Image (cartoon, rainbow, N blue to C red; front, top):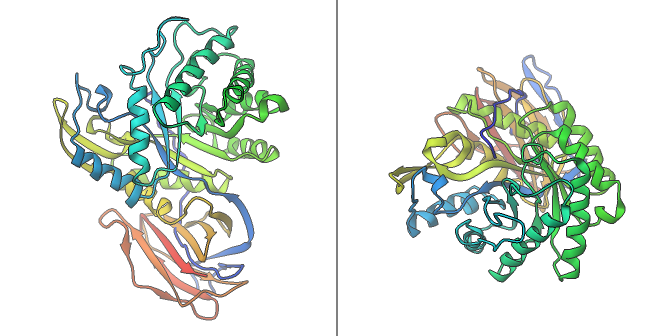
Length: 441
């Protein structure tokens, strides 16, 4: 949640979505020169998808507008929540908790000025628009917290979670700390002890809350801390998801985390990323490529940094809000909004990824199946159009595939349906585009 440095992983994402009837979709190499062939095998199911989301500060936080006070009227809040949770289809939010909740060990708790109560109100409000999963997370540990005193932190966390419950929302999940490598960098043993003690306290108090750990800045530190927890079955039973960020490290490190999560039957989530380099459509396509690779590597939930934020940090957010000295003026979607929607509007919680081969090349392709539906998502990050052919095997598609396409000039455009003949269809995707192909099974 700090101002991160940009990373430059490039992979391309191809939004083919399509296909699939009962069991299989195969996309193979086209016979004619210049066309890419992809094979989507609907029998080869991979990870379940839990959804797409963001972190979030609340409406009236000064951070949002970078002013002494922030004011966003009710009608604008309705428009923004509709845009994020109904139109874009986000289902996850990580509630960012400010420091200063407990200024010294044993001091009175400050829930209103630190916006804990407002976060609970935001959850209740956003649920009316489609929010499904929320989990509070302190941005930084309090200054008094020490590596040799996990019980002091556990007292603090219990007070926070009790306050959410008192406010009418019991968190199903809780992240003990955002980016522990950045905030205090306590040893991995601290994370283990916190998970064990907090989990025991939660159950004794009647909470069902599970923990999202370690929510770390990079995959290497995330692996080290997660391993310390998961090796102990007494602590492991309190974990609900393994989470990491991708501000540093390499995509080569992601499969190791996926293997760890799979070993213990836990979902793997990427819970925060942004880049200052995302200044227009072309540069923002890097986010599409990262999403593609994360999904190929087994990640089940993907979050960008902010759902909404002031335009002074427009690359950090999906919805950029313009303020005049803290007073709301207008809002607009960023390229990240349109790019994320090529996934989040169609690949819904409970869908499963299936093999798409090749996943990379001139276009990047992933595929998914859900109730009565098959989706193929293709990204073409190159500067030229690309021809593709998708051949369907193992089942039948009812009628046609329906492409939805985004480019720099047009977003979520419904393109003419494509007929599937003899189990295949062919098309051309524009330069610097994403296309989602939707078919009924």
